[in-house]
Length: 236
Image 1 (cartoon, rainbow, N blue to C red):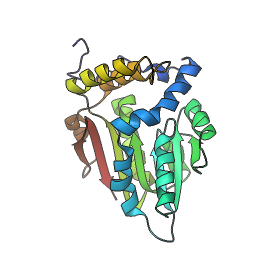
Image 2 (tube, one colour):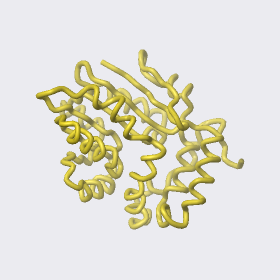
Image 3 (cartoon, one colour):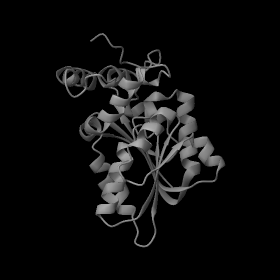
Image 4 (tube, rainbow, N blue to C red):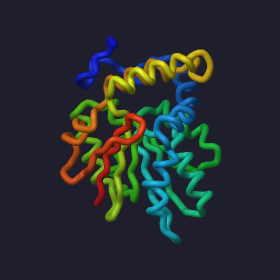
């Protein structure tokens, strides 16, 4: 094992975060996110556990996805809410214009609101949400940026609301398994994308449960989720 996993490796940077990266590879990466996240992030469980129980008859549930990337989680939530006959106002937020441009062009009738903005801009605009989620965002941040996003999450939360940030848990087993699995898929499903290289970098940059718990606001709860996942929850 050559990767340094005892601490966060902030010296490495994901290729897709480079503003000059290959645009076609970037768009293939966004396209493949739904398939990869279906296995790694288990978005159906996120919906059943965090979204559906808070839906109310007669009032749309206001949902914010911070760092939405290609928007696959938002589109899944929109489809599930419609299937279960619940109303929702879903906002996909990303500071990268390329992600928002691609996601909005691939909305597929989900009716998601796509915003190229930061959490700070939403706070300044006085926006509030009933449920705030993120998926695979925290490891992109420096420790100072993490504190800013967590603080903004609290400011954006409506009374009685829920915040749930999901990410990878840094672990040697996670690194080894992802390396093997993506090597097997690299010639077909993941070909021409950044997913294998960036996924391994993501694990090197990610937090452990203990680290994210230490950084979390008072009263928030960090726990491990299967497989090799971190969940950070906060409530109003």
